[in-house]
Length: 87
Image 1 (cartoon, helix red, strand yellow):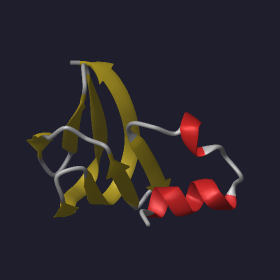
Image 2 (cartoon, one colour; image 1 turned 30 degrees about the horizontal axis):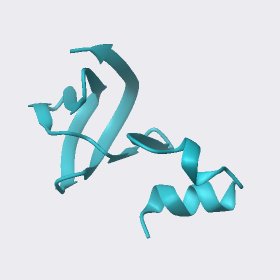
Image 3 (cartoon, one colour; image 1 turned 180 degrees about the vertical axis):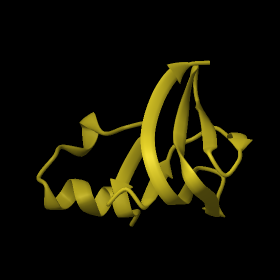
């Protein structure tokens, strides 16, 4: 079971309202991403992913991609901002 699914179970959220992309920020040091459609940019100050017609942009310092799978990923570093913008 994915980490986000465990979070939904523990917070009593209905699964049918959580379909699609999921982003979980952990203590401004890590971001868990699920449901992305590909990596767009990879840099120490910005990493972005495609989410359909939008982009998830993670900004910070010393950012790095620890793991990337076809639909999920883990970004670590000093997270300063998360933005969802039109592609």
